[in-house]
Length: 305
Length: 305
Image (tube, rainbow over all chains, first blue to last red):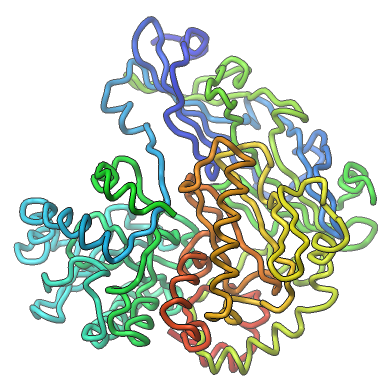
């Protein structure tokens, strides 16, 4: 086992793989002795003593005001650190790293775009058509072949109104605060939100009501008004499915953000106000450069905000 | 203006209001000179130089191994800090703090509710009326009294179309990935999204276009399609203002989530399709138990999902 201090001193920086301001973490690609190495650095959380009592003076060494307005002050702070008790960060090293590690830690650029109905018809529909068949075989396995059925929370086999409700793979299955379920409908005729209209009003309203009831019966610690129920556009697969998380979830990467997630209630209210709402609307959303739609020049040029 | 260093030295700790391990932030309630004070402390993100080149040796001072398994090493790190260039944290102080501040920063349960136009008129309008005057004095200080003007990115004094664009207090002002700006409009007649209709279409469209242009001119590292522009409902103050963040921001507490944030483009497209959209829509959103609206039995009972 090499000494990590020694390895880090020999780290030759190549490029930044990722930078996440929310979690205060970065991933760096470099090399050590000519072999690829990945370093991830993440700031530590403040240490909360078991007593719960925090002594501000031992946490903060010095401050410098940035601004002050009325009763509000904001400042930069120099924090106390000690390697044993209050390390400022956590450093992980993968060495030697493989191509797969590098891709996993790498990041793509995200663009905010506006998709008009014309762009949808010209570029997105043909793209969706390439995403059928084998690409969603795993979905049909769940719905019709009993795959993952041991984890089902609910299974209604009615071909029109039925659905499967099961834990999402993003959930650890234990921490209720982080509850994340996925509902996949049996019907195959709704590929995305763009296909929804006034004729689906009853279907969606009943479905949402069932999702609230079933989830809260299955997890008695959760109340019906503690769920956020939503879909994604663009979704990661084109067979209508719905995400169910608790209101305690403050974030999940981009998963609950505007410009990616759409409340099921928004959809219901919108098609109630105007049956062909999702047929007419220009939709704004964020798309990563690795998405296949972003590789189409026409799509890219005709969706600028 | 009191010196923030002096105020912080006199801070008497009472209790922990909040602790978020994901964002590495805590909120403390205490008192200064016998009056309530709230201190929020958040670790800063790593500073990414404009060149993009990170010198690991200047970031990390020292490491101590925690564990090593095969190619994986993890360790604690002591990080370099300097108050001017690499502050370890951001410290905000609210002093004197009111009950409303204490509630806002405290831990609370969150409920998903549906606000019909009737509920809006019966409960929300009277609530908004209590939030005028002194409660938004600090906003008028910025708009009309030159407060914080040294940090303005843009100031257009036109009473109808003008606005101030300035760094939000949630931003450390340095790290472009975490860019967070706030635009406050000069006009006083828009209290929330509920007041917007087709007559505001031109105003909002021009405003959004200006925000993209000004932001990207001021921060050349950011492109026009790398911004998420949105509002909040309920907002924390009832004078129309707009949030501008980069698409790299994956989350900010609840700030970018559906059920709290609404894309400015959604508003524009909705009032384009239907002038009185926000007059007619039942709006679903998440509200904390400490919010004063949640204390109204009628509001609570008539907004169940």
